[in-house]
Image 1 (cartoon, rainbow, N blue to C red):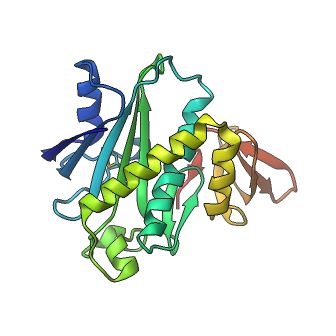
Image 2 (image 1 turned 90 degrees about the vertical axis):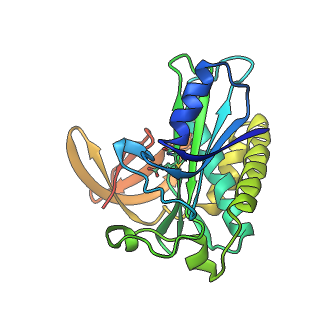
Length: 239
Ligand code: BTN
């Protein structure tokens, strides 16, 4: 793996996408000390101050383009890897469907996966809150960090190495088939049993997350007893 380190970038995902256009190789990693325009899912901002957290993006260039079904599976691959890296650092981490990593119900890591239309290149962008202690007031109730969870500072570079190793292992596991990844993911997830909101037929509905199907879709039991499947990543409404 080639690791390209930057001081300040707009977004490591943007840099990775630009490097792809210049022919960057499979498994090229882009990391930065600070992002000025860190991106989250659904157009949200990913707050990315300097000297605090880990921001990186890894380029995947498979020998043949990924099948469409593989794209959502990569969210499970990445979240399993990040959760395991955090557990190794002493954090009691769990995964909220499909790929948010939480500790004590607060977000400690976010993952943004972007691909070319032909799915011949994919960028997995990962943000992990590492040594962040002064979390801005508007985020403090819903975000945490390794330092806040474990009471100690961690080297951001050690955290990167650990996360990359876990991503490597999870990609190898995925080569055995998605069920192997899903099994691992299920042992780490903390969504089922919780109340979730989603949109159905243009209307917001609330139900209880009751399980995961074999493709990674979330089963949601509505008050009527009917069970619906939420498929697209990001189709849950956040509070
Ligand atoms: C989310 O939970 O909404 C996803 C957040 C993803 C943040 C990471 S930080 C590194 C990479 N660069 C970005 O601009 N976003 C991702």
